[in-house]
Image 1 (cartoon, helix red, strand yellow):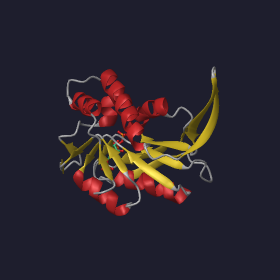
Image 2 (tube, helix red, strand yellow; image 1 turned 30 degrees about the vertical axis):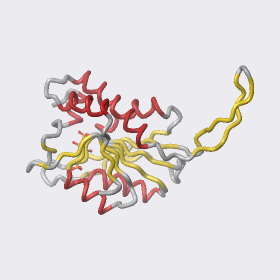
Image 3 (cartoon, protein in one colour; image 1 turned 90 degrees about the vertical axis):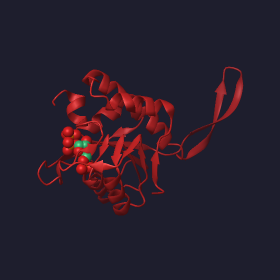
Length: 208
Ligand code: PRP
């Protein structure tokens, strides 16, 4: 799966282990999701385009670089919300556009309940944020929405992906790279990633 990047960074792996731990409470869980998002966004934005910029330091002229592309963060509600602050720490000027998708517990199909996108694209690069990619249905649906909107460059930033869902996603959207902290092999009958971390939204918001 050439477009799938699993972070090998020791900080990411350390924080992922803490995140998976069943003893991690919602406050700590939120902190970890935010921190992992910061680190993954750093990795996912390594190929952003820059342009030369002349700068005056207190001691003279310097040649620098500035971002030439505008970024949109697209959190998939609810759990993707937890990744926004972390991404913003790296890209404070990013616009945020929300997509609400909820997985039907019986069919495991994503049900769209909210979409807040402008009429035409306002950013060059969209980073879809959702900690979990299980069957892949939600990530595929969110990416479909963005493509219908006219988004040109899309990247998916998650935390844990399940191999069957990741394969389904790469088949549906071969042009969209995925950045993850971990790749698990299986899903259970209820569509939960094994071993995963449980229900990210419930653990984040204390609703489990
Ligand atoms: C979870 C998760 C993803 C989706 C992954 O959200 O945050 O959005 O399920 O599953 P999939 O890959 O099989 O589509 P959920 O629908 O539970 O909503 P929530 O974030 O509001 O809890």
